Length: 605
Ligand SMILES: Nc1nc2c(ncn2[C@@H]2O[C@H](COP(=O)(O)OP(=O)(O)OP(=O)(O)O)[C@@H](O)[C@H]2O)c(=O)[nH]1
Ligand SMILES: [Mg+2]
Image (cartoon, rainbow, N blue to C red; front, side, top):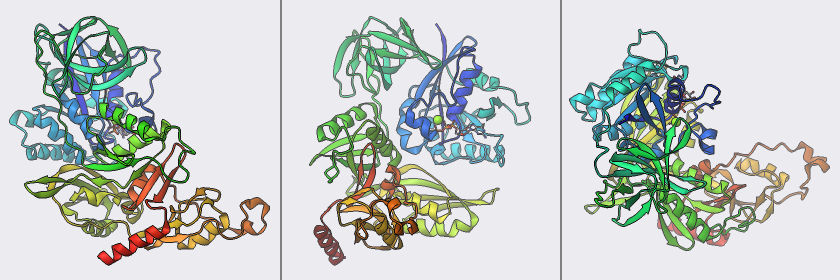
């Protein structure tokens, strides 16, 4: 029987997980000498590469001495916390990375809490000790205090600690030790992470934790084998969370080695393999012995806290830029997403619209970004928090928020967050002259806050948040103050009118951009919406032929991205998303209807 260790690498965003996995792959000799390997090799998806973040957890395997180590790299961003939750049940140990300068951050708490609840003993890696301003002792104390606060048991409190600079390829037991290589970390994994429980001779029990597809065999499930063996060609029973059972043969069995996948014949208890042959295999399903099927606990992860309505584009430019535009196509695509993404939910709402719920704006934004890249065209409404009713009380999600700001911005940050119903729990001056403020805040208060915060802190503030718990609803929170500049005509924007409108606010469009009546073309400098005409003036669309227009100086418009739009819009607005454009529009394109609604709202107050 092979000696196996299964670990997950967990941490707050950017603390160096994927870089550490790179080094473990390199230094275990898993790659061939000539193999060209990119930086952060595990971040294989296009959006992951572009943004330098991990979105989906991914597994790899390395050999170290006579051991096989299965490693799962997880995402650190709070929105993808569901990925971490499900992966933790598949491993017997975790490497908890903590940035030697930033220290314990909101997502460090979230992932460590989940690991502690599952009884795992973390191998703590204080990473980035090479950084200026790193303070490993302080960070070590923070980790210890956090474990105490999380009610860790005595064994867990005796966690092993290493000091590392993943990017430079070394880890060590003591700060005084020489900077050499990753050997101490390999040793820690072998010594401190328990061997998998379960027996290869028992009846087969395996569980799917990730889905993938293979060009030749279709859908494959990446599974952890808890008991028994799985063999290519043998028949197994797939048991779903709802209890339904289907028998099928494993048509292909795939093992992992570094970044490669290799066909294998058999695997046994303790290992992680991918299996093909079950058409409707899903995350959480159990693969069992047909003679004695004992299903594993289906995976429960924290429920979504944020939802958004996705609907068919019904604006005047609908269908001119996208390939998939119908409600059926959108529904199909969303259903497909829900199969692999257990932290998200989808509910058809009628009217060619769907309610999609997830952990946060980034998670929903990434789904939307993927869809537009695939050729979809659709609209998104303003994100809303998912409220619940508990014993007759309306509850809403709260988040733990940490902001690091230069001292001079401390006042404005506290004031603005106060208006958003945040409650300050601590204030600590940091060695680098910044102040670390911690808050508990309704998730609602965070929607649209990032932009404002960055402006208020001249781009120097850093904010991080992570889900805390549901608490009683905290009343109205303040939202966007500036109104919208709304186009009152259809056509192509004219430089001369944009020039004139610049005085009224910040423009979102440039000359020749297509606009329509009801489209938001800028942010007004004042509260309240303003209908404006971007087509008016000298009808000279070609600036080069017009001597007079040469004198026109246009300010660069504010770029509207999917995420900035999600932050910016109000309840009566929508984002129109196509493979080419992101536009903001009023829900109602008719100015008369809008005026009436505004009047009603005013009267109601
Ligand atoms: N100075 C320093 N930088 C490091 C070290 N390890 C990683 N980094 C840098 O930190 C950044 C984030 O590294 P990643 O490995 O992508 O971090 P991650 O934890 O996988 O991030 P997510 O998956 O998005 O949560 C990159 O720019 C790395 O080069 C280190 O030991 N020292
Ligand atoms: Mg990563």
